[in-house]
Length: 319
Image (tube, rainbow, N blue to C red; front, side, top):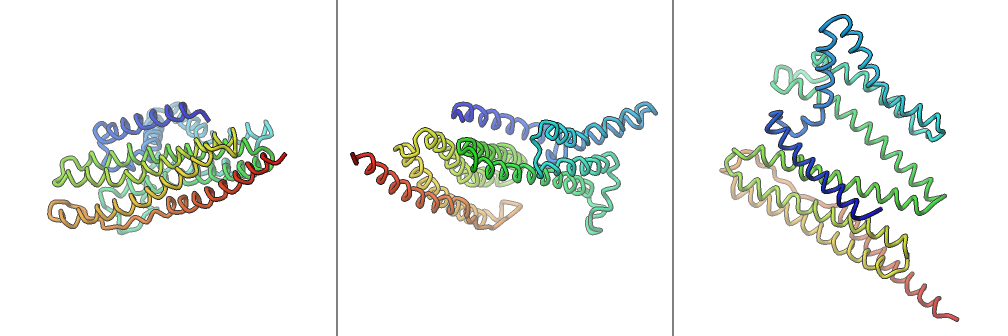
């Protein structure tokens, strides 16, 4: 994959995420960053309800739109089936259509959500919000599960037939991880920071934000080096660039581990010192298992490629 294009995608994602955080907080007056998770369903449900109540014709049109929206995943499945590109996993698309009928109906008739939540939440100001978030989150979980299974199936099949395509699929997965981290930093993280702007001890929330995102940024650097490493590996798997890339992944992963632990210690320490001026105290210890695993994998790969390269060079010297 072209590194320049990836940088452009990440830059656009950063800007869009930042703009979304401002729109959600200052335009839509959202109380939580999670509002964005069910806002599209909320918009569709409210629009269909208004159209349905407008007239008999409006009710018929609303019903047709409702069915068309819900059947979109099924149409995708039928297109894949017609082209012969469908897999067993694609049956999930039909399940997604069935769930869409349920979730959009819940948003058209939000009072139905009362039956989904425990009695303890009944009457609270966020009761309906909890219900909307629950049914919408399940939709995203199904979607993510589908793409994870599809990626896994694609990687396993391409590994047997075409290694270059398998490496490209791996790059796409790494790019998706980068995009998800950017959304966490520039949308969710920034939303929570701006939401605390009027609170006492705002300086603490700024420091907490910086300390929290530092390990995430470092892990993104590791992923970016991994994407570049795959490009170098496809060109020459025994080249110096491959070995240098693996060394960088190992070193950057170690830094990520240190940053994760140190930042959580600093955040906890500042919370303890500033307990009188901040409203919410959340003591935690960040255990960075993924960077730690990547660091160990980096050590193993580095040793393996050093030995492989030495053997490759020795073979080339034999006449």
